[in-house]
Amino acid sequence: MAALAELPQTTRRLLLASDCENQSNDLARILKNAGSVEAISIQDLPDHPASDFVGVIIDIDLTSAAIVQHVRSKLIGEAYQSLPRLFVLADSLHHGPTQAWALGATDTIERPLDPESILHRIRQVFPETPEDEHTTDARILSNGVTAALIVMSKIFRRLPAGIPLTIEDVMQAETQILRALKRCSLRQWLVAINKHHNRSYRHTLHVTGYAVAFAQYLCMREEDQRRLTRAALLHDVGKAFIPVPILNKVGKFSDEEVNILAQHTRLGFNALKEQRGFPGEVLDVVLHHHEMLDGTGYPDGLHGSRISDIVRIITLVDTYATLLEPDAETLAMTPEQAFAIMELMDGKLDSALRQAFRPVALGL
Image (cartoon, rainbow, N blue to C red):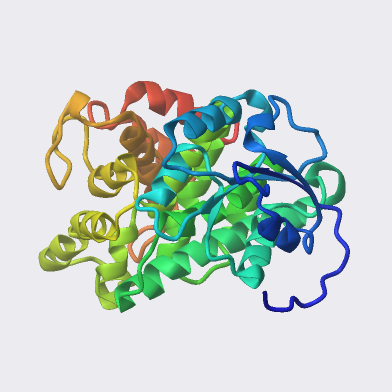
């Protein structure tokens, strides 16, 4: 094993659950460079982990239905909902990331183990100390915004260059974004995002902020908050393939430019489908977030019940965020003005969701 750079002592306490006979000693040795480690058999995974654990690492055989079911029965418990989960994948396992995601993984690492990469992941995913006691709101907000911007960079810079995007890339940012919007206000998130010069980045992260704030306002379970975070971060992924002069144009679009811009839904869907590993509901959001309940949307002109709940939510917050953005011909609307326009869109947006969203949109 390559020598590791000496790291400062930390207060992280990690739970390592393994189905290996040696309880993943090789991994435990690496993890001890990031904090104290308690290694246990997967069969001993507790229903209620100790409150001072900052994360759990799961090293199991994902091809074993019995083991997977045992882990699932533990991780769905309320005690694990706020605890980041990192899964170890065998390098030969097909669809391993998807299986880990289905079990609620926050992040994944792969064998053969790369010590430096693992420690980098640990520092990203697991807080050094319990944040509600030791980490400032400003730091949590900064970490969340930085994590989100890293995803945007991967979408808009790497994808067009042919560098694959994976669901793990998005999942790495989830925990920090959710933590930021839980500890800090939506307004603080928007102020931080508005400092970024890239309009496409800003729009996507506005949508993400509103989607997460809405999910938290509705007291959605952690898993559903994560689903919405992923969907919001990826909803406009197809814009990475739109010519930059059109994407950044200030002023009225020609009919041809409008048609080109509208292709972003199909382009994004195709790109993620080719990458594999992205959940079907994310692909649904990417393709259909411009559909309207009355069938006047695009690209497929879907009506009513053919539009899923998660698409309806992203469409709602995407519409609201767009209305708030100024362009060359109009000034930025106030939240009240934007919401009033959405109230005139009867038959297009889900009316029940719209009313539920009102306190979030207007800061009530």
